[in-house]
Length: 158
Image (cartoon, rainbow, N blue to C red; front, side, top):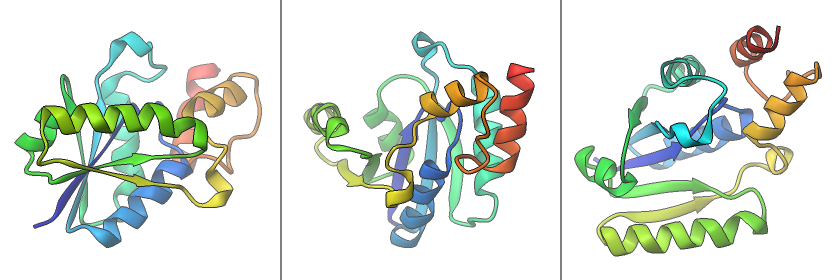
């Protein structure tokens, strides 16, 4: 079984994330969305909330599941039997940082490949950070996130 990990903080899940997940689900037998427990980023949604928001967003994809992890991504991928990690690239500016991560991951475990995927053009500008800022300022984020995420954002900023 070809398994891939799609890691991130998903704070919150966006349509750009979903675009990559849906396309990865066509390429791999199993996609595991790995929600990172990185409290240094000071997430808007706690880990449990982020996992639940992602679960609701992918329930229509039978070969996609959600998990959370602490520590090194390559160790998590190894424990879950994944042979690859997907990283999203929105712009050239993402590449340098993602390339460095990929090289470090390869050094830590050369059996785990990194695959870069770009979202569809409509989502290349989209980030969780921008979505949170627009929502915080009362803007309409309905084109950027699933409806349940939009409601969760409204609840946080009410």
